Figure (spheres, rainbow, N blue to C red):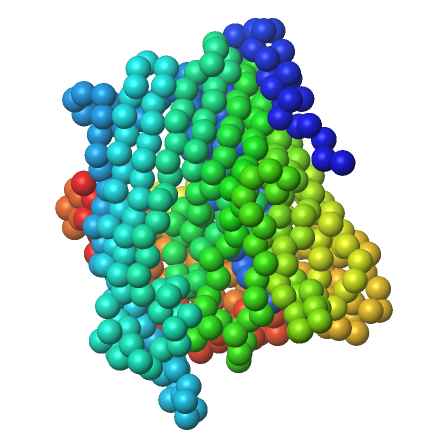
Length: 474
């Protein structure tokens, strides 16, 4: 029987409000989806941590709502956004077999518009409405008839409601946020363990950073503050999963279309729930997490007519911490997942994960970081080995960035690898971001994918590509 968490959380939050005025109330960060045999990927770039950035819900430490828009603007509302044109050129594909999709050359010429409207209803309440529209001209240039329809449906055109929420104060130490939003858990900047409340856009692995990958989800979020602690209770009625590569994409790892995916309807008994307790102290912070959600990664369930992809209901318990020592920042996350389902394994599975990382900022204009994550199947047996499931799954991330020309130019190296000895494959991304003007940015880069034993890298080792984007913000 599912516990009545919303009622319990409301009672706890009301108690916290009654006991004292707020002091520090930074918000929380994230949760992860466990890997499956079909969709395990290395997730994530640049997840913000509490030592470096403000709370992700837009609320300052005392719980009072910030203005929804730039305070320098006149009036209670603001409209902003950006226009972008991005291109990618594949450099390593060979000619396809007869009837195959030709992945050589131009693979993206995408125009995108992001718009965001913010309005302060009064000094306690604010609303945001955001959306985006895009069209990829590459398919028309190359010949639409040469691409499978699932790929065109997934990649050629897209319009989506992005963040859309109502936010405000219920009391001196109690805040409420309703609507589509992004909630970040965990402390890692490059890998995902406890960061699982928002699904990810995984259609082009490794091409962009995590802030452009998270998909907002409909939630009701209650935040209470007391002293150095903040408590969050979250109900998620909208059931939403990762956007994954479509059949015909060079990021799709199989030779045939995937079986039908069974997606639970939103609301009711399918709603997801989460709790977080955050403490922000001098030089360090601590977060405790508990979540009852669907696994973003599907498993194959045999049926009378074949198989379907289904999503298991799972539970996650986790803890995450940062510790600043001089120019060093030490990071750690620990989590346990229960109720996971794997293809070819009948019983529900449990998995434990440990993430350790270090960041160094002692060099002028330079930031260096290293993170490693290991996931272990707790109920491992010879049957797992027989069907090709390893006991331990490793992920590693090295990141180096350097700013110059008065911070107008930033050079970044990102290296992601899987496997205990990096034998599982990975990618290396080199990029340069240059501010041509205050509102005009140019990004250039190259991604080199390395073959390995683990999905998806066992299937995408020749996806190397050059990329560029010109973006105007307003």
